[in-house]
Length: 416
Image (cartoon, rainbow, N blue to C red; front, side, top):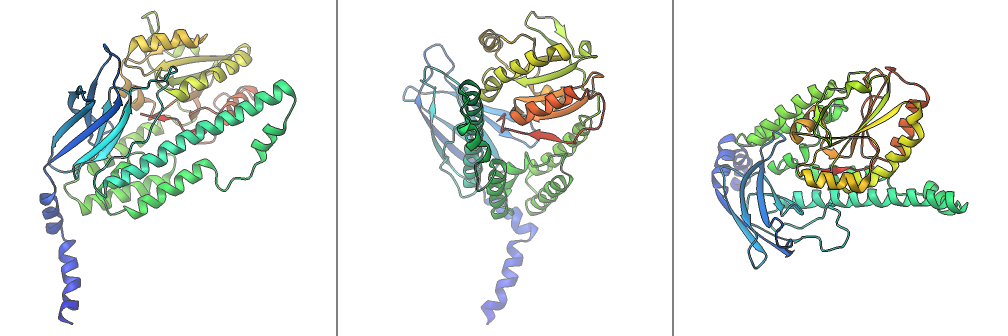
């Protein structure tokens, strides 16, 4: 009986601020990261691995870098005040995220030896703590969701092509009318919601909250801030939670400037001839602004469809401008030559500022702008739904009329 009476008091003591601060003191101040790759890049190409830490501001800080060893391994020693979210950039090929409350190990593919090289997300299991497994599960969910979205897009596209070429509509009809136990996005969201409930009291939850503060959804926005306040109360030392809260509030304020009917933010970036160009000259026309990058598979996949759209509606006043967030100018120039896009090409001189100004974290992101230079809507990714809405806007001659608020997530884009 005496022991039973002590248990509530002991639990209260364990959950007290002093106990939580003691918990921080007991966390490892130093951990080891060990990694290996199956394939190294060819001689003359980068063989460096960068380690960055997410501080909650949306701009991860590179904290260290090493060269890949001759045995195709690498390692880091992290000295830290408290655990947090780290990301490995392995020779620009693999991007691996982990939680730093214990030593971690990871093996990845490294260089893509396939003849056709397209950088798409891969899931790599990081052997670490139980909290780290939250990131493992979230990463697997996101990767599989992305790959499934690409597969569904391809199936729909080729079924439509088959129908147009042969007149056989069986494949297209099946794909349109098939019964699914759950739509793609609902399936992804259900898995994510479950994980977030299981880990709701753990500091690693900030990994999921980084992208959960959509200003379009007031309920979700308020819920995200409540979850962050909860973590801040439980873990006063978790500075990333405080930073993230401020970042989300700031981003919401900027996103409000990007609502339908608002003027598109002014930009000035160099074109492929090095001359600075803006968007103001397109007033009087409909403008589709496509944010992309040479290494983005979904971006490259969408280009042929944008070409078809441009060809169909250019006589009705549709123009397209592609703005690349590439940091490798040669890769951008090669991609432009490969894709042969018949519209203006601009290169952002500051990827982070561009993404903050137009509030996107995945590409392709497309903004449809009306004849007055005002935003009609925004799309994360490209799909037949996005295409249909663009066509509808042009056909109806929309210019400054009210549009359904919010971003259209029509196909999972490639996250940054």
